[in-house]
Length: 347
Image 1: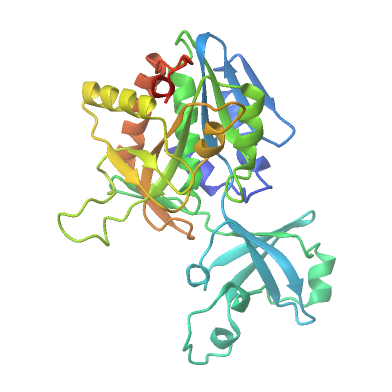
Image 2 (image 1 turned 120 degrees about the horizontal axis):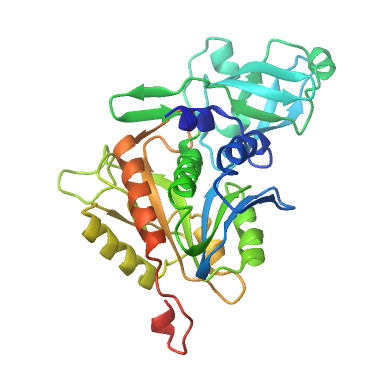
């Protein structure tokens, strides 16, 4: 768990992924034929081999904040980088990145700061980052409009078989890819393991890397919402500790039926229980891989996570381990995705 802890505690809001990228590069570079950083900042690890060419993607970036204004008293207003709910941020410890170091603060509201009754749920525009410093003092430290603000949660929680931390989305996926790289270096097929940037603000890294790589098939390794605490007894839900999740549909894509069928067969043979996600919200890097160039058959395997896009999310170690086992078997026996005239054959 030590490397996973390092990944989760590293800082990497969208557009600021260098710390995460360096950790991963140092961990994997001895296990692949080539490692490159492209113009977008994606880390691309290439294992040479025979067709079909597979692309596996996990995004390095996490949600966070960016400074939009600072008043004379030093109170900071922010815009969100990625999808965040204001209620999840109140009271959060944060740090601001500058060339001179880190400046620490807390997220609050005027009512909370003044110990007044709070009658309405706050919106993002109501939130204030209070560092205790004036605008002049902040300027001397390098804090300015456009500076990144990230959750300051250095602790990695490990209790029983569950783990918790600030950026499981998608450092869990990055960890899974890293372990697959180590386990699958002798597999005869060609694979590109892509650690993407700026997924949270538009899937940008996967879009450019998929175009450059031109894979025969693709897989996003991500996390999804575990809703097991909210569903009625007996109702289908995504639960911690109940296995990896195969996404059939999300907000912007319907995943490849051929790949999904192949994954189900592998899971059955390996006696791995998988869960299924059909959702009208959210998406992953797979949706841009799917539509790259002339189209690429693609799907998503995820680890269910509670408290997604908050300062502290939770996952189960068993789901992570079984996700690695399932995808390792998939890489040893990749799906048959040779393009034919029959659309059903391709999808």
